[in-house]
Amino acid sequence: MTASVPSVASESVAQQQKSLWADKYRGATVEDLDPPPALSFHPSDSISSALISAYERDYTHLTVVSQDTRALLGYLSIPRLKELLKDGVVEERDPVEKAMQKFRRKGKVYKVITMDTPLEELEEFYNGGVQGSGKQDFAVVTDPSRRFVLGVATRGDLEEFVRRRP
Image: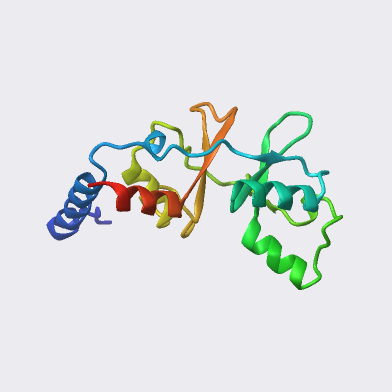
């Protein structure tokens, strides 16, 4: 039985990546993205009301919370919802729960993204790292205890932040 020892080369690559991020974000956190407040719906709400609200606010992702406990159940991806409507899988009068994507809770460890999360971690999360299970397009921003959904940060928000930064 032999112990796995990280190579000097892999540590060097990881260090270079961290320094690139440090230069790009310079200590910024999710709060610096100024994410808009989350727009949440209940599973029984109509798809049409969710669509109208998303269009009015130019949102691409909406959270779905329990009507009783306000626990986060899943989300609606507006681009995916448009495809489901076009293909006739759902109709606008259907409830949100018919089109929502549920969060899988069993056996999963979720990365908690808060307003204090460094942007380096957020980028790593989007790229499938930091306990991620593949690339992500958005992150649900919560308080540290995961009791309240504060907002949604998208990959586009992060890209816009970098583009605007001198």
